[in-house]
Image (cartoon, rainbow, N blue to C red; front, side, top):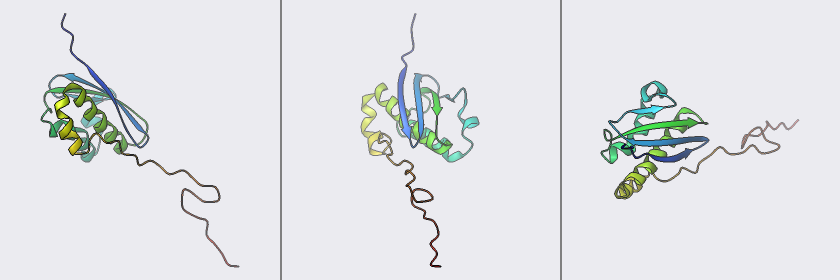
Length: 131
């Protein structure tokens, strides 16, 4: 019995977490049980997800199964890109330089700033009146 090799990684961005399974295949991408085009409405999000595969010329070489949780759609797309890039490295270590150069391996550290006491949000203040 020949078992397909499965590469599993995690990608993160903002509050979103993407658990990625990379399998040898024909280039199908499934997100939470549905196709990529159905899940991501915006074309820009679909482009973001495919970037690591396009840069490394592996768009038709692997199937991707993603389980996304948390955050918004754009954050989830960024998390998925991060996870796919990490999975490609575990599949082929020679792709590390290309992915690192394009910035797909760096986890974006920007997150939501916490609300401060005495303020309306993180930075907005209440209106000041003299009288």
